[in-house]
Amino acid sequence: MAVLIVAPHPMNGSYNYRQAEFLTSAHTLAQLPVDKGREIAFAGRSNSGKSSVLNILTDHKGLARTSKTPGRTQTMNIYVVGDGVRLLDLPGYGFARVSQKLREHWAHTLNRYFMTRLSLAGLVLITDIRRELTGLDRVMLEWCEAAGLPVHVLLNKADKLSHGAASRVLNRIERESRSCGASVQLFSVLKKSGVEELSSWMDHCLRVQNSS
Image (cartoon, rainbow, N blue to C red; front, top):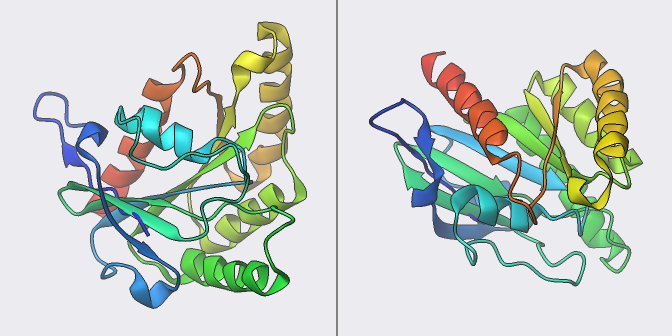
């Protein structure tokens, strides 16, 4: 499992995600770091570009291992930056070649993680804009709504659509996600666009968690 800890930037009070370093991997909740501090989790369907988003966010090309093979991330990977903040790369879901037993394990584990993890400050839900929200994406949103957890939907690969088409998808997902309180944005790993908006949302969640 990987944990990302982020230290506040001395000039503007935001977090310097470029300091992220891999800490460990976990297959069970018991293997996670002690439930103190703050953490942001990253989830998404296999092949949605989750690991690439983490690499762009941290400006570290090889931080999270990427692959053209869906379903590669099958542990919780944790990255540390400092100041008691972690980033968790959760296992990708929806990959057909994963065994039924493993799918059941992660469904149970992630549900418990969202419901019981006190240091969890927010979830970044990454989806391929061309697929919009899948049934499993909606399950993730439902879990977070039940846990009262802030969610930010990242419509990745926005460069694959025209500006007008991407804007229409954004508007649809915003309307669909309004009931659970999720925020939504466009993102492109290829063009490195949307990083500042994502960072700002994460900063806000971490500050709110820190002050509570």
